[in-house]
Image (cartoon, rainbow, N blue to C red; front, side):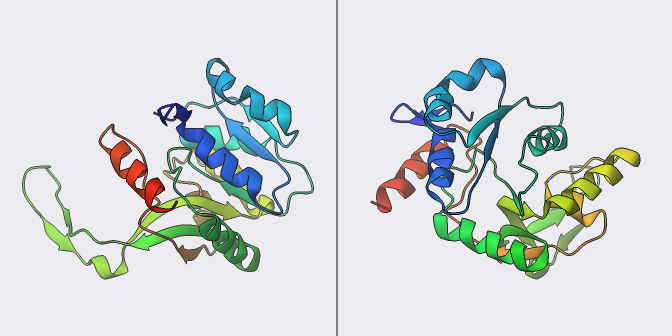
Length: 204
């Protein structure tokens, strides 16, 4: 899904090109299987900041693989899902600013949909109060020392986490919510592509 692109441009190139434009980014590690790296070979050759890492079995394993490649003098780690190519520069700068102040931050938007809980998948148990719920996006940004400690705890206790700041939550340590934009959608099905194209066209 990450290689599917708009007008032949691979989806992940949208995110890569955005991060290459940002000030203060000293290294970009793309976690991708070796057989798919050809779509970014020219970018890696043109900019020494771009490097690759092998994906792992689970998301947390892939993030750890990429984390092992960051420079030792990095002050923050910014983890972004290539399936979210519509994130804006302003969103990235805002979440980096919050992480720099608080240690960890995540882009998110208030939940719009009504959420119901079901134990058997057939009948509603209850309706959850959405006023306290947030839909989590990426980038998710944190200090390297916090991420390192979080990975150690996750490994020691054999925990499974569904997103990157969940690793920080396990310490526990605070994670700041940075309000993002609803246009930062995740491309998961072919039906998402026309919406993404529409958003990109509206920004021109």
